[in-house]
Image (cartoon, rainbow, N blue to C red; front, side, top):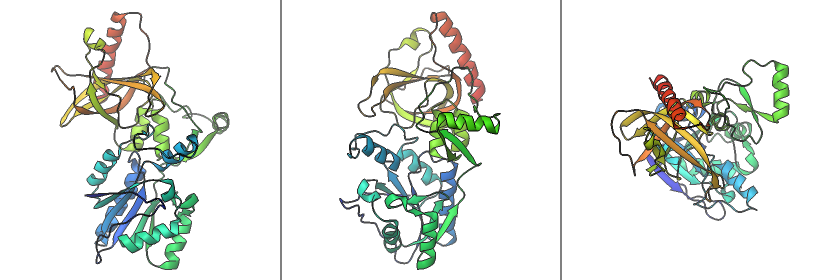
Length: 374
C-alpha cells in the first residue's frame, strides 16, 4: 500500500498526485476514526469496485479529525491546533487506521492535513480535482456523508452532480448499522458504579421512558455504527457494546515506563503505560483484556485511574493505565511499545480498607479476566 502525505497551502489547495493516465481510481474519503463496521463496509466496497474495474483503490484520510479541528478553533478564538496538540477524543491513531486499510487491500492512501482553508473549498471544486488529477471514476460514500464548505456536498447534491456531468459515478454504501441510537449531547465520561459489564439503560424502556430520557439528557439521534457512539459507549464502560460496533477489541498503545511499583509489593506487578497514549482511553475502572507486545499476547487485568493534574497536551486530567499480565513467566517490557486491548468491564475504581482486601479483589479480577479471554 502506497501512503502519501499532503498539506494544503494557505488557500486550501493541494497538489494531488497523478497515478496513471491509463488507469482510473475508485475513491472514498473521511477520518475513519475507529475503523468500525460502517467504515469497513465503505472501504471494502472501494476495494471491490476497484478490482471489478481494474482501477486503483484510493482512500483520502483526513488528519487531524475535522471535528477536532473545528472544535479547537471554536474554543481557542479561531486558532487552529498545532502539531503538538493531541486529539484525546480520537479512537485510534492514524498508524492504526493505515494498518487496517492495508489489511483490506487498499492501493493508495492520501493522508491530508485537515485545515480550515481546505475545509472552505467548495465540494464541486474538490470533486473536480479528484476526477482531473486522480482519475476518479467512482466515489464511494456512506449514507450521511457530506463534504466541502458548510458540508454542502451531501449525498443528494453529489448524486445530482455525478448525473449532470457524467464524469464520475456515486456509489452509496449502507454504513448505518442496526438503526439509530440516541446519545446525550455534550456527554462526559461517567464511570459505572456497579460490578460487571454495564447494560444499556434504555434496553427495556418503553417509548415514553425513552422520550423522557432523551429530553432529560438532550439526546440526539445518531446512527448505531458511528465513532461518536463508540466514544460514548467507552466513556461509560460499555466495552462489549463498543467492540460489537468496532468488529474487534478496542485498543490503545503506549510505551511501558517505570511506575510506583506498588503492585509488585503485593504480588501483582503491572506494565505501566507512559503519558503518550495513542487511542481513546475508556472511563476509569478495572477491565479484562489483553496486553500485546509484538507477536506475544497475554490475558491482562487492566486498571485505569485519573490523576488530579492536567496534561498540557490535551487539557484533560492525566490518566494512569496499568496492565497486569496473567502469566507465570517474568516479563520485562520496560521501553517496549505495547498494545492494550479491552474485552470487558470488571468493576469501578474503589478504595479498599487494606492490602489484604485489595489482594482478594485482584485475585477475583484475574479469574474473571481468564473467563472473558478464554
